[in-house]
Amino acid sequence: ATMPPLLSAIANAGRHGVLVKSAVVMEHLATATRVAFDKTGTLTEGAPHLTDIRLLPRASLSERQLLTLAAAAERSSEHPLARAVVTAAREAQLPLSAPDAFTSTPGRGVTAQVEGHRVDVGSPAGWETGHDRALCALVDELEQTGRTAVVVQVDGEPVGVLGLADKLRPDAAATVAHLTAVTGVRPVLLTGDNERAARRLAGEVGIADVRAGLLPQDKVAAVREMESRGDRVVLVGDGVNDAPALAAAHVGIAMGRAGSDLALDTADTVVTRDELATLPAVIELARRARRLVI
Ligand code: ADP
Ligand code: MG
View (tube, rainbow, N blue to C red):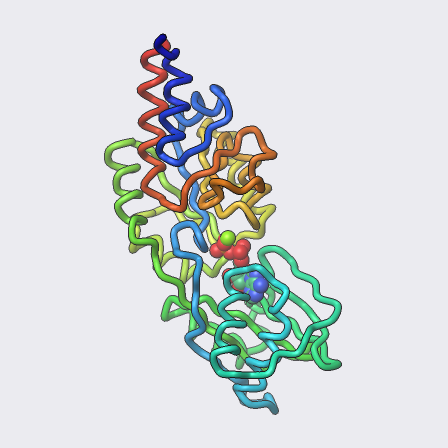
């Protein structure tokens, strides 16, 4: 017996490594007008590495001490930036003590007690008003070269900045070009990272619409705003930090989550293999199925 077109499209998507749970999702994929991408782990490989350690002139500790404290605080975090800091410390054979009272704030950073000191590692967003000139200068210098800068504080005082860099996924530019030129869907970048690093990367992949410095709830608001203007939004994210925005979008695509149960709780979430190129393929497949049904 032949399968109805929608079912066969869902099965076909499965063969592309894309798990679609309902016909409604197929319909939303077919009529998408926008694809919103998260940056870290979605357009990039999500495996950043530490490139720079910068001390504030007034700080009374060494680069090694700075990295040791930051890495100890980051040990319990699953964030790709945290893993990069811990890896760099391990490679430098620094002794990492176990942190106490660890807390993490999505889109911001982490806080922990390390050897009796409170250590914060996170986004420089809070300092952008410029009341700490020396700190802003270090952050600016790193961000101008496309780095992600994170500030390290000890007992409430900033002591330095770490610079991190991540590689673009090899299929990012081709996927965005295909979406724009062939599929006719407008790409947009939604990221918690700084504006400069975001714009530089968006330029490399061909995305003109960039919204940077967003907290997880700001990503939700950005999705809702586009939808309230009549856009049908597919959001592609890493499925961890981006869970609220994935749920808010018409279709959330959790990349690299095929085979995990994490994102499956949300009916409108699709999980895919760890490949961007499946995205235009699945939108086109959903469109073909829709033409056959109507
Ligand atoms: P993206 O939208 O690019 O995936 P996130 O929302 O995960 O970014 O994080 C936004 C920003 O918050 C990062 O660029 C960084 O400055 C800061 N941040 C988040 N988690 C951490 C962490 N564990 N360590 C250091 N900085 C962090
Ligand atoms: Mg992310």
